[in-house]
Image (cartoon, rainbow, N blue to C red; front, side, top):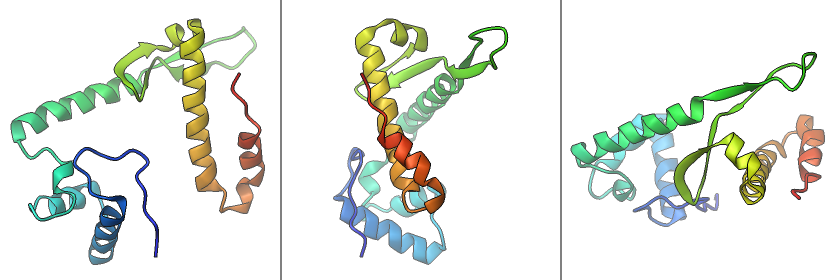
Amino acid sequence: MAQYEWKRRPSGAPKAAVAGRYIQGLNRRHKGVSAEVLVAESRAADSPLHGCFEWNNRKAAGEYRKEQARLILRSLVIVVQESDDAKPIKVNAFVSFDDQPEYVTIQSVIADEDLDRKYKIALLAELNSTKRKCAQYEEFTEACEAIGNIRVR
């Protein structure tokens, strides 16, 4: 049986094992679990995930608009042209950190030594998460090794 853990425990969430078994049951019953299925099945007050959701429609609508705003901020990129002969690259125009709700420009992150290091550490954590997902596939061995060699200064 799978052992579940929260990477980041949602507000109102039960123990990871309880949530994992519940979602696994939904997966069997529905032959897959979509966000819509999870919301619908968690609507019942006795659902172990009921407390993870905002059921007040007024509050939920406001939260949805905030999520839309976050999507806009995450979706904007800037095009960087290092030199005339280099291929332009696209980078996120705004970034955020887990411990701060505000988004800041990537230029301000790069210009600040502490923020730049913090951002690189966050990027490396994302890469390590991807590495764990890819490690089970032989085709990704070289990429996993390369990620393992990255050191943030």
